[in-house]
Every structure is written in structure tokens, then in C-alpha cells.
Length: 153
Image (cartoon, rainbow, N blue to C red):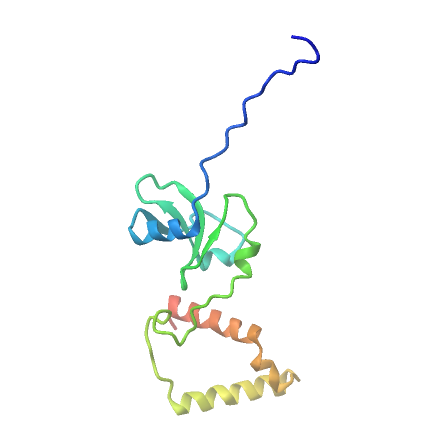
């Protein structure tokens, strides 16, 4: 073969194509795919909020993860950084029937107690009252509520 003639190379083999989200959702609904918790150690607490999507028969990871509350799917390959998952803002709100396990009514007495504790927090730590209006504060409270629901009081 001369230098001007180039040897034809076969294209590199690629992994099986990634399913589209709608197809993955359909397979989850039909029980062909399952949602399973991530096993093993991880430095990220994001896995407390996400399931891995696996083939129900082979248990093969399908390159998707799903929010445990709102079931939103993200494309995710093993070894990838969970940064996108950390930024997930779950569409399931604590007051929606789909997201709440038990729907309870908080008494007026408990509401007053919470307000008093929040006022003391602001006074003792010299913080503005609007600190309790922020999304970050609500996220912290939601996390504490989830921990309480999981581990009890």
C-alpha cells in the first residue's frame, strides 16, 4: 500500500444508544425498568434523593436516575459528577398529595411555638427576620423534616 492510499478504518464501536426520556418513562411504568437505591459508599448526600434506573431483568444500569419524590429523570452515566442532581429543584411540594406520605394538620398552638422559636433565632443570632423567608432556609427545614420522618423523634 502506498503512502497516498490510506487504510480504511472501521468506525469505533459505541455503546448502545441512550434511550430517550419518554421511552425510559414508559419502561418504568411497564415495570421493564426499576427504580433502585444507589448502593455502596458515596461522599455525596444527593443519593438520598435519587434512585438509579435499572433493567428489571438484568439489573443493568440504564444511564438514568430519578428523583425519589417527583420521579423526574436525568441522564446520568456512571462516574459522572452529580452536580446537576444537586441543583435539582423538586417539583413535588410538601403540600401536594403525591409528595406527602401523611397529610397532617398542624395545630395553632404548634404554629405559635414555631413562630416564637423563629423570633428567638433571629434575636439571639442577630439575624434579620426575612432570613426565614428564603428558599435556602426552607430547604434546610425540609431536610430536617425528612430526617425526622425517616428516623422518628
